[in-house]
Length: 208
Image (cartoon, rainbow, N blue to C red; front, side):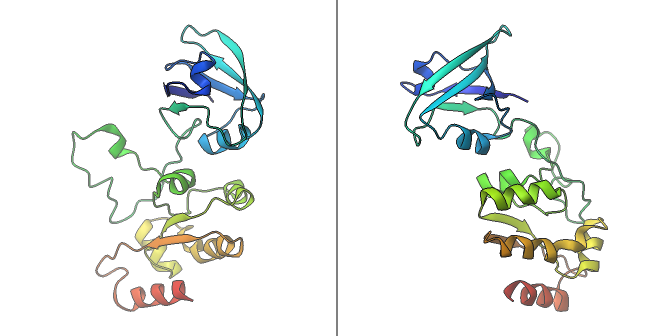
């Protein structure tokens, strides 16, 4: 679990420390960080020790002195260093499944990662998450998040997403609400599935 450094800003702390694009960030103060969110947390101190892997595979320790809110100047090829959490639903309207062939590879990734929701506003379903994911969101107050609702009726949501666990939406939203997490929601309205009375119910449930 390493972060591939895609760029180092000129005159930054990282540049002054000799870190170069193409190298990898292996750890911060001995901790393997999973994403740029954790990186920001672990580097918010006056001194940090980075383990850097050079392009030839050798590793070195880099000590940097800084102000707590001072940015290192590192840019990465991805915001997450482990892997992007992907979607295992099979929604009747899936935009990725409808993507035409021959586009850039990133457009075919069915991401459902709460970290990308927090960082970039990507919509997630809350169905591809573990208890520890919810715990981290609440503990570190990752807000706001963006959630695809589609229907608050459990049976209808399970039917639309072809996932028998999709009906737990309202309980999971309430967990986030109770922790002070702000949630922006969207509904992809599909005639015959979640329009009419079901749409009215979804609106009223969310409004409440």
